[in-house]
View 1 (cartoon, rainbow, N blue to C red):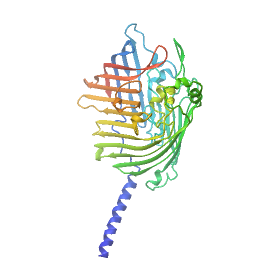
View 2 (cartoon, rainbow, N blue to C red):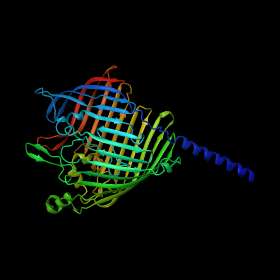
View 3 (cartoon, rainbow, N blue to C red):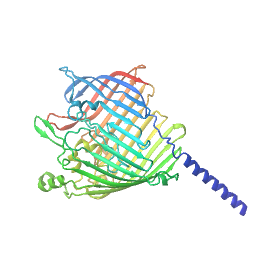
View 4 (spheres, one colour):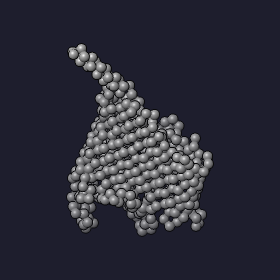
Length: 464
């Protein structure tokens, strides 16, 4: 009997040892690379589009190239007014001008390579685990498309630095700047879990003083940021398990949104402007969150799943993912959402899958508890991308913030950003399709309004 128990213990020990060795050997491998990365193609689509009440004829030349760790994407608009033949130049006015034709220029992959740098469109960027800055975009409008920069550099597997700057337009004052130094004290060890423990400290600051001259005078949506708007946070995380099939990460985050003195003074000096608020108590706000994220890959990349679940605790005057795409639509409005925001709780969930390297779909939801009784809004996001199936291909993205009723989740309005492209390949070099955009454009008075564009087109599409 004793011998039997000893043999059983030996077998169990061997199995455990093999599992530990298996985990350690495969720990440095990353089997989660998307089949939708590193594509090379050139497209130039000729079509007709309506912007506001004007009709334009022309094309957008959009090549994408990948050379090793380098990536390049361009977006060159050549649109001509159908009534007078003039070229539309609004996309190049203000700020960085023609540099907006660079949709992105990148080196490396974030959180995979020791050096990652990206210039251009910051859509989808997040800082750290995303509680402070997540679901971010600096390109919510054609007229004010910004060229930003994002970087993540790790030194000797121990010390690292993430940084995001929203707008390389150096006229005026500092735009949104976010930085997160992080430290992996055991990064050089070979101990699973222990070697991945990471401590981070985040800071964000914005002193945007953007103003738009117009027929009606000068207007601004940055009244509260020009004297400074800031936040800071701390986080800790670790990879609990990583092998060729599964990667499981845990994290914990604390964020504090500092009191915006300009907003506080405006509430005090102009109480009539805030009469619609049931509670005008306003000050610094903070929040706490902890979550798990899992990536699963079936054998031979047949099926990928990425899932995240996060429990959040909100203090007064706090909104999770405060610096998101809605922040860049109207910074003053975003700050005013903090007024009267009361202590509560919520969840954040994200689920994505990639099937047979042909279809990639992702969905996410940030949902406060008791949404109907809460003065906080939910956030919904959907992302779809396919390779050519038959001769059809689709690519789309949808985001909506400040939701108080999930029944309105897919109704397009001032809180939405959307893009859907459906194409049909005619032959090896030609395709036709429809490009739909719900974005923001400038009105005559200098303010921005939501608008939709439906652009049927035919054009060149070449893959390499």
